[in-house]
Amino acid sequence: MVCPCFLREHDDSSQSDTMGNLTCTETSRQVRFNHDLNMEFTVAVTGASGSIYAQRTLVHMAASGVVERINLILSEAATTVARVELGIDLTAAEPHKINHWVGLPADSRLIHLHRLDNVAARPSSGSHPQEGMVIVPCSMGTLGAIASGAGTNLIHRAADVTLKENRRLVLVPRETPYNAIHLENMLRLSRAGAHIIPASPGFYHRPQTIEALVDHLVFRVLDHLGVPHSQATQWRGLKQQPSELIRTRED
Ligand SMILES: Cc1cc2nc3c(=O)[nH]c(=O)nc-3n(C[C@H](O)[C@H](O)[C@H](O)COP(=O)(O)O)c2cc1C
Image (cartoon, rainbow, N blue to C red; front, side, top):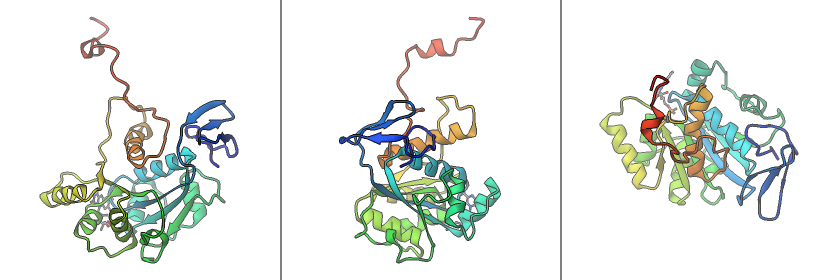
């Protein structure tokens, strides 16, 4: 099991008790509480801008220690955008390439890659049990296909199945500005039970790196999927009055 300790990738360094509580043996710190230890999700990546959101989602799911299997589906456009934005080649992706991308050991079997045209793959059937699905980032094209119910590939089918089985479907749409069709599609999907989490991270945790900025959004996604995380960006309330926070040194 990958240790749930935040972003550490030391295998065999965590122990779980009968309640499912996990303790990192390196730090003796109990880091997770009462989660199933065998969660399965489908993660789909489409051709909207923001490949790094997909990467960080996979990294944090792997680090959670409670996700046993990830079904990964990449659209063709997703590989183009990943090349443009991250300089990586995910075309004809092989397991070791994907593992390297998210910092897992080359022989890790956590992530199972499915071909986009394989509509017979596991996530295509509601009889295959899993917790839910996230599409991150989600293009307007994929959003529209799911909203219309007229899907043509495994991503559309898996999302459709997730909705009909009343499982958690999280969409991370990215476009700017949104036109009326985009907004109506999001409303339609929200009414059908999808969680719409636009790729619009907060700044109130004062991120110093792009990863910290992206993780703020990714942690919200994981919250909606029920996957534990470091909670590094969880808002815990102001101890001071807002006016005290914006005082300058001269005050
Ligand atoms: C560099 C790049 C950035 C893009 N950014 C977006 C975006 O932010 N949102 C979007 O809806 N489409 C975006 N597109 C267009 C989609 O990739 C395109 O509509 C594609 O057909 C979506 O297909 P898919 O949903 O199967 O991935 C982008 C394309 C490229 C090449």
